[in-house]
Image (cartoon, rainbow, N blue to C red):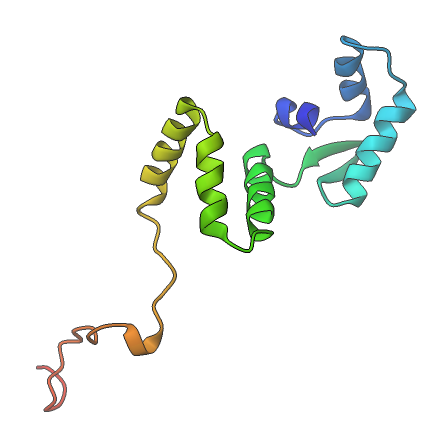
Length: 133
């Protein structure tokens, strides 16, 4: 997946093979099998390009990482405690990245409040005496 994400465009088996061969000896069929398995698992989509396929990620590396973190967090019986432990494992640079991410995410709306605790009704311009004129 790392290689496919790095290309940032649809890639062929041959392109991934040549990229990997710069570091180690690997067979074309091995790369083809891995890309096919990733496609069948839903991580890659593919389309025909002549006799070959072009593969591209279904989601970004960041979205994949976020999903992994969410899955790991969901396994905890005490998510708040898990976060405290996770924050304790973070480097100062990671904590600063978290602060930056929270500043970016802050404008996003939170889950809507239940109807019984939604607060005062919105001002519609109407009074109890009929429509506003």
